[in-house]
Image (cartoon, rainbow, N blue to C red; front, side):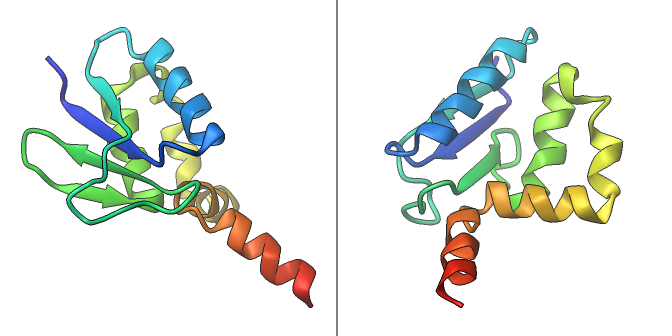
Length: 109
């Protein structure tokens, strides 16, 4: 039975690559990904949301990674690293779809 759903932008190749990796590592079969628009509205390129299907709670950005880790055991060893500021900042950029935005701001200076 699926327990979490990852919403991703259907046009984002990076998100599709991550979803395939999550699917391969999910030997408990708790994960599903969707390219449908989430209840919160359309996603930007690179942005993901994770929904806990039991409670209906939707998490965004770095806050969704612990939920993924909880349901995909291959990530259990990685979870403590997310408390390190450099790792959490990088995850926030990668998962919120703002990595491209941050790059655009950087090169415009």
